[in-house]
Structures are given as C-alpha cells and as structure tokens.
Amino acid sequence: MRYYTILLDGKEKVAASADGKALYVLDEYKDMNALIAAGGVKAVPKDAPIVNAETVKLLSPVPRPLQDVLCLGINYTAHAEEAERFSKESFGGERPYPIFFSKRVCYSQGTDAPIPAYTGLVDSLDYECELGVVIGKDAKNVKRDEVQDFIFGYTIVNDVSARNLQTRHKQWYFGKSLDGFTPMGPCIVSADEIAFPPKQKISCRVNGEVRQDSSTANLITGITDIIVMLSEGMTLKAGTVIATGTPAGVGMGMKPPTFLKPGYVVECEIEGIGILRNFVEG
Image 1 (cartoon, rainbow, N blue to C red):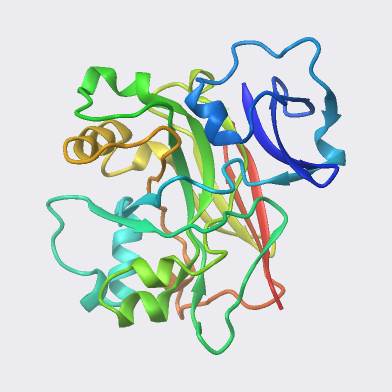
Image 2: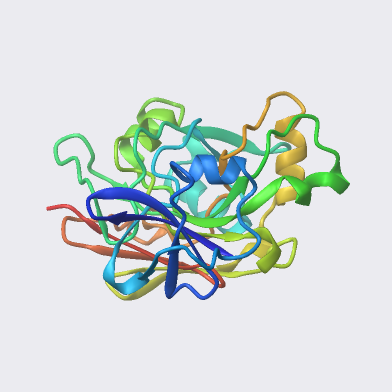
C-alpha cells in the first residue's frame, strides 16, 4: 500500500493507493500520524472517495512529524570520503560508532514544493537524497529479530543542508534544521512492499544531471542496527521518521564544490517509492 497526504478542497487529507494513481481518501483519519498509529489499512475501503493522483496536490506524507526527524551522518563509505575532502576538521577522523543527529521540522513540504534559499544566511545550500524509515508503533528495547515488526514503511527524505552553518557551529543541528530543509515524499510505501533489508536504487538529479547514484544496500550502519541501537536508550514514537544517510555525490563533494542556487531543480528518486522533486526558491 502507498500512503499520501494530499490537499483536497483546501483541506489536508490522508489517502491510500494500491497503484499510486487512484487515491482513496481516508476521512476517518485526521492526519498521517493517526493513520500510522492505527497500523494503516489492509485493503482500500470500497466506499472511500477516489481522486486521481495527477489532479491533486501531493503534500509531504508526514507534514508535521510528532518528533524531530532522526538522521544518520556519514553512512555511505564514498560519502564519508567526499565529506572529509570538503572539511577534514568537521567530517574527518575515525568513526567506530554511527553518527546520529536530528532535524527540527516545523513543517515538511512535499514534492514540487520550494526549498528556501536563505540568501544572506546560507552560501552553500546542499542536497542529500536519503531513504526514510517510518516507525509504525512505539519502539523501546527492540530486539534484532523484531525490527521489521516496528517499521510502518519507507519514504524519501531530502536532508537539505547549509554547509556553512553546519561546519561553523561544530555540530549539525542548526545547519540542517532551517524551515523548509526537510522535504519528504511523494508517499510512504508500506514495509511489506519492499524486501528487507531494502536494496533499492537511490539517486539524485540536479537540473537533470545525475549527481548521486547508489543503492541502499551500501549503508554502513543498516536499518536493523539503527533501530536496535536507538531504541536501547530512547522511545521511538509511532510516526518517527529516520533518515538513513546519503550516498556520495552531494554538492560539497564535487570538485570544486558546487551548491544549489535559486531556480535549481532537485529530484531525489528511490526505486519502488518514486520521485521527490523540489526547486530552490528565487
């Protein structure tokens, strides 16, 4: 099943679809967080209103996450190498344990929505295409063989980053958390539709040029380890989104570093989920 948040008649609605074309509006759920907490739907209700995905505005599947989005840093080997080239002080050194950080998300915009440029504050706007894991029920002290039971589904996250702020403050929270820096979408694909662990093609294009091209099979710290490790010390509430890290090919890794500018179009694509397309605001 594929789950969407859409704008219909000026109101946010939750919808489900088997094919990503015909969307069945689920009026019994006030938002995606409520649907996730209920475990989703096993079958599309026969009496649900139907709309065409091409005729409605697709919002982020989780426009207002209940908690900060949890993120993995430097979780692909080739990305670790390019990040260290950009700033050895900020990204270099040995990493015997995964890097965790979070993004403040007041509102997550969806596909075809703008990314703010923050001209005057940000001089190095960057993109990061990532597989997002959506937790389906409260998770604490999860055992390795139970991990799949706690995954509701998967989405695409663009971990937009202000590199000058990220490196200036010696931690990543501010440079990752400006309003509009967490586009998600176009939908959540239920966990049963993607084999575990996901080995999906992941890519990113900027103005049509392929910048990132890898597979989620290349994660350094896999989804099982991420959920087991995090749930040892904190409760992952239903609806929590975990961004699992980005592969090589980001702007700061290019020679010379090449960052986003107003008018640029960024397309993040993950096999089996779809395309998250955003443009940089002028």
